[in-house]
Image 1: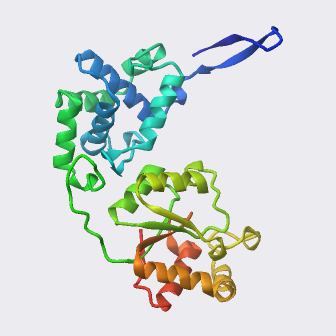
Image 2: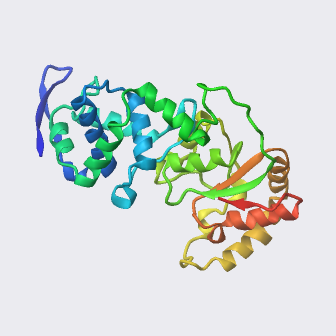
Image 3: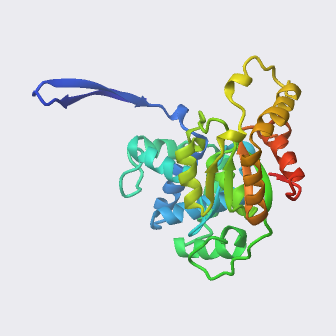
Length: 307
């Protein structure tokens, strides 16, 4: 571990000392170690290290590397240039900020030591994939041919956008990162997310209102927050785990009864576009969006699909 004190000049010419937190490889995410090993493998083979090359090689490792549950790895979703991972770019910035990679994507400082000490299974997966491709261009061509479902949003190929039938879906972000969440939406042709949380805030900041709306916009998906169709937190106080029947009964007869206009507007939207009701819980049966979906079906919507 490495840490220390750095002097910083102030406006009055007085020096202050700022403690720099030590880098601890044990606190690194497994996927970050794989990324560093990948950079090391490309450098060792004399291949150019670029963001595109890294991005697409990580995708192939995710799909074909055989890591299984050994590493909580990157998820990808279809984007303008094929499969894309927000977490990859976030990790890249973090590793550069921590001094493990330099601005030219070369290993630096402790990055070399971390890359040299990954588990044998990880090293084998990385070397196996990097040995198959000579360049970023070759990797892109392979990914586009082998995984066409990840190219449906791509600007690099001509394709006919096949619009799917309008309908209502629902999705919870519990247990998902932003990339797996977007992947589920794009794969199902979702055109707009209707956020039915009373408060569109999350401890997972990727799913807080502004950040989520921005991520959806980049993926070509609209966002609409309808807090009137949520359940205010005051009604959840004292609720025991799994004790949803009374709350959902109150929601259906009370809140939905008072918010008929908002519910009708969402039902109409679902007849014109492919929309997904959003809340937290992974299981729609444990979430008020399941009650809302059944209510919208009574208003003439097609049977809702829970992603």
